[in-house]
Length: 378
Image (cartoon, rainbow, N blue to C red):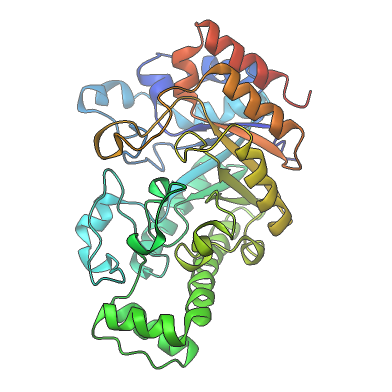
């Protein structure tokens, strides 16, 4: 049985490449932090760079060749730490570059381009789903994980830039490409002019707004269900988790369903665990906010919910400079967020990320944060 009390996101290979830990040592360290589950990338399911430098540098290729993900997974299992194999579904810059015809078009008629590190693919792109399912099938056979964690399982959008003072009307809303409009019209028997994206977007907003929202959400559900069926055919006891946008339906006039196609009340049909990316510093919120938004998702989904907290501040440089985000994230702020989660209805917490805590483990701040994790609901 899964213990979702304390999780850790392992989105890079820093523990092995930079900190020179062996699988047994890393598993011991996670156990000492009170970790009961991990969400991990692997050689089976390598991640590309995002806010985390996940891709392996050329100079690390030699050591990376010696990484044994199966040994790491087994070391975790011995310590009763559950393992979620993680794969990003709607984020794959390499695949998108090879298949530009799959890129979405927004309501202004603009085809999506990379924004900072982000470029997304909609969940109705069959070629992408087929590619990802083949990767997951190999990983499930090789790693025999306890669960599969599906990242970017939604319609595209750089949600980390949706700050409290954001005007929704200025943000891209995908996808109004002709092929997508045709699929919508066929599924709903709507009659939408499809040749021109701005015209299609305006027509849908005026005539089919509810149908468009419901169809986008249904496409997300169908994509997850297709993945779910494929991996459960290999390992029937797998649990399916997705990373979940940390928005209330009242935020940005229900953009979470209308723009991103994530309706947790409906997603409960195909999702066992909702992992809420409640990154409060990134979204300019206070330390009590993660527990509040995750509790709302728990109430709406009526499924298991874990709330992920940041371990360090992010999105401060480049295009994000001057965005008003706090420049630091103190141990007390982290403890306050954990305290609020302990009192909440959520099933557990998760930390983003293992490498960040490893970098702080010998500092007073790091020790204080790890001590609070160890004591969470114990």
